[in-house]
Amino acid sequence: MLVRVIAGGSDGNCIVVQSGGVTVLIEAGKRKTFIEKMLIQEGFDPTKIDAIFVSHAHQDHCQGIGIANKYSIPVYASEGSWRNVKHMGAVEEDLRHVLDAGDSVIIECEFTVKAFATHHDGHSTIGFTLETEDMFFDRKMSFCLDSGYVCDDMLTAMKGSDIYLIEANHEPNILNNHPDYSDYLRSRILSDIGHLSNQQAAEALAKLIEGKGERIMITHLSKRTNTVALAVAIIGDALSVKGFVKGKDYFLEVIG
Image 1: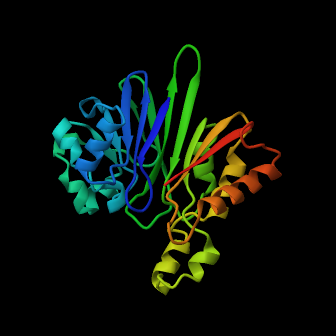
Image 2 (image 1 turned 180 degrees about the horizontal axis):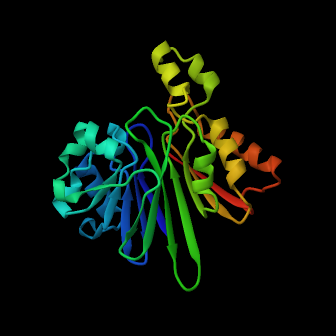
């Protein structure tokens, strides 16, 4: 399973996942011209994208969704996302598909994509797991982007993955003292429908990682209220308490 993050963070998110000749996008949160350009630059053929999955209808996850029309790509999102946000309206009716929490869909007999509920201030926000299998091995990947906390149902959905892509958005001490953030924005980010802190991401990963060489991809770091060094240190500390060694029991990279 090939995973390539072509954009990550509050400026926009778009991830390519490919297996067995089948290619899907998770999120379309940059301008459609940017997504198209980056796909070509990274060696992907935009005419051969088999599906797009959108976790929720905030701009940094769906502003480029109109790329679906140009290449006739099916788009999957929750009913709440389709119903409530203008960016999603750019998709032609026959390309729209509803994928609510608890639903699953098989893409070209290669990916089984399942949706699970997340906790964010959008309409019916969801995360995804992607599973592939062949005669040699099974692979599972989990996407947890934009959630105020990780509940037991989310952990159950993601458990057993080989690849985890999860946000570690902020460090609360920095956020609480940053002059650029209003009380309202600070409260929104820290709330149960906001974003995951480094510690929350670390606690979730400590419950998920089994030490079988899982790949962890950390994304959506705030440029003003977090640092790569902090995110890596806090997650590494949580996993070392479980006895796991980076580079042996798991692999960690920070993207965006």
